[in-house]
Image 1: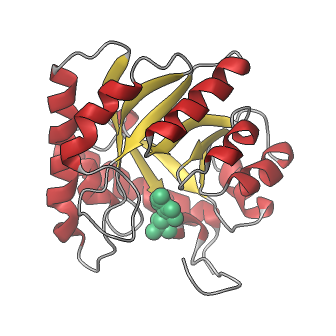
Image 2: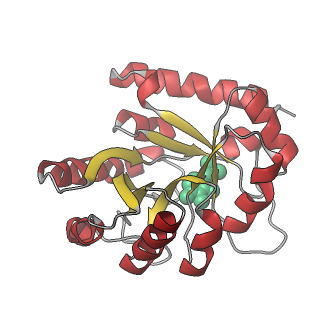
Length: 235
Ligand SMILES: *Cc1c(COP(=O)(O)O)cnc(C)c1O
């Protein structure tokens, strides 16, 4: 079986190749090791191989793992977030990638303020209009960004998307390209308190294409930690 260290090296190689192909600097793409469902022992293997950015989709898992991992780990919340979980998440989250409602944005801002923080967030966009996914439609994203921009406890940094599951990564290229366009469009409006720079897109199956289309964060789980096994069906 491949070790996490070997897997990370292989992913790193693929990122480098994609950067080369696209004429981008490797430093402009940050790799998030998506460790959901995986035990802390495996996260430590990734940490020892140099990983510092970890992605989880459940607040509960961040709460369990954070005390067991070194302090310089940056936790990225990448899954759907319920407002009643926000308070517990705030002390741990380096960034929240999944802002998808005004109610959630307000809750995050309020709790961050109480904690004396201004937390970087991304707005989740459902580029393919999939019923099963959260996120704003591309059409409503600019108005949404304007509505949350004044909130004092958050800093909007860009956009995130979860592209459809596919065997052929090329089929997701138009979604990644369109997210980048949307980001540039909104950036041109120069909305106060909004920095439209970060693009969180690309997973194990399609991250090279995402890097070619301008991803600044890629979120890779299976490619680093292996297949996830869920106790019950459904994810
Ligand atoms: C699980 C997950 C990933 C990682 O998926 P892989 O295909 O295992 O790389 C990326 N982003 C989000 C939002 C996820 O929930």
